[in-house]
Image (cartoon, helix red, strand yellow):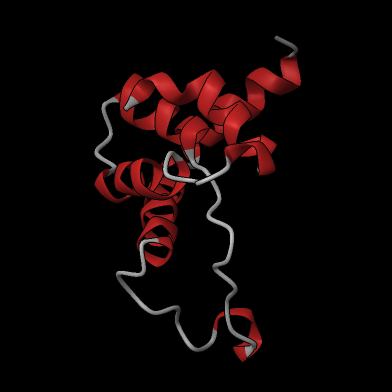
Length: 104
């Protein structure tokens, strides 16, 4: 790993963890339709939740490797990411699940 990659990893997993973990859960809650997006998000233009992004890499790092509880993120990955009818259409999701999906 290069110095920059190591620095970024330490930054995201260390210093940024107090912000990343709630952000993952916030977005998972939206993607699970358990909460409506705040009205002021995207300057009031609304939020398009058509394609569920995958959080496999982040879940792997925080939940599996660091024992951080991410119940909504896990639920989102299980329901929305693994549940995609035709995953071949969304190669990034398949790749993240393939490389980091053993964490559920």
